[in-house]
Length: 247
Image (tube, rainbow, N blue to C red; front, top):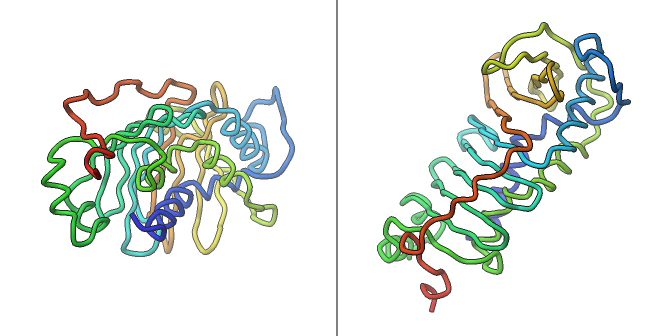
């Protein structure tokens, strides 16, 4: 994968969460009933909960990059860099990823091979078949694809964007996939961002909705905070060692 494509995917993944940065800034209000807090105080609670999370499962759908270039993500990731799930670059292809420590298993689809390995994708696809590529993050391709597994990077980018001049509005409590949550909304870069924050237990963000011109552009769901990332890895017979393939 070219450096440009790796940067594009990294920007795409961070854009999926950029609006959570609405939570940046403010003062913590420990011990208060979250429903009695102001919109900015609720956003700060969500920011603190996210910063303290050791793992999370994220599902994102919609236009999170440039118009016409959808990005989808279904990934569990933790602070140790482990992850498991699927990332998609729309028409450019999708990839199943499992990462444990520095070892990576990656199973691209046909569109990925065609777009990411111009001129040789069909050959590589034929060699690999329906198996995973296995290697380590020493390989540029694998390292680039697994940047989405870096939860520390995610959180740093979310909470490091100054938004003190963004007006936030608190909505009425509702349910998001069975979880009681209160919405906090604001306008950022021409889009309306609504962050739903859990009202029971830790005030984790549970859903992020981005709308533009009245139409939903993207939805990001957060769940399984502090739950272990699945540890199952593909069997030896289900993978091809990348160094052997290259050799």
